[in-house]
Length: 196
Image 1 (cartoon, rainbow, N blue to C red):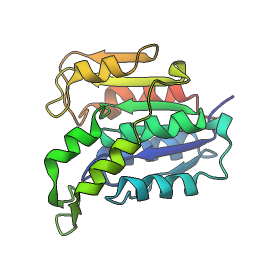
Image 2 (cartoon, rainbow, N blue to C red; image 1 turned 90 degrees about the vertical axis):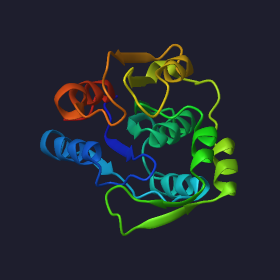
Image 3 (cartoon, rainbow, N blue to C red; image 1 turned 135 degrees about the vertical axis):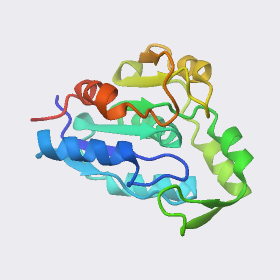
C-alpha cells in the first residue's frame, strides 16, 4: 500500500528548518501533494518528543505511514517504526543515542537559531535508553542510508544495527549528507512508495 502519511524527525540540535527537512517537504509538496506531511520541532526531552509524535500520528493509518529520521531522529524513527510497522528511511541514524548524547550534557545552542538554547539533562540520557527499540520486527521495511565519511557517528555501528534491512553504504559523504537532495532524496521517497 502506498504511503499516504509521512513523518520527518530531525536530529540533535536541529529543527524543521534543516536542509534535508526543507528539501523533503518541498519535494513532497511538489510531487505528492495528497500526502500528509508532518515535521514537528522536537523538545529536548526524548520522552516528551516521542509523546508528541505518538499523539500527532495517533489517527494515521499504520499500514500507509512512513517516517524519515536523521541522526538522533533516525534513532527516534526506528522506535516509531517498531511501534507502527510503517516504512522508515534512516539518514546516518544514531545507534547508541544514550551514550552519544551523554557526552553533551548542559546547555546547547540550536543549529538554525543560535538564539535558541536548551539544556541536556542527565534524565534525558535515561529517557533515550528507555527508547532502545531492540531487534526490528520488520527489517525489510527499513532503509538506512549510511555515509562512511560521517564525522559524528561510526558507520560500522549503523550498518551492524540494521541486519536484514536495506542499507545504502556510501563511500565518503558526511554526517549531514550534504548531497541529500541531489543523490539520496529520490531513493528515500521511492523506498517509501509515496502516494501520487
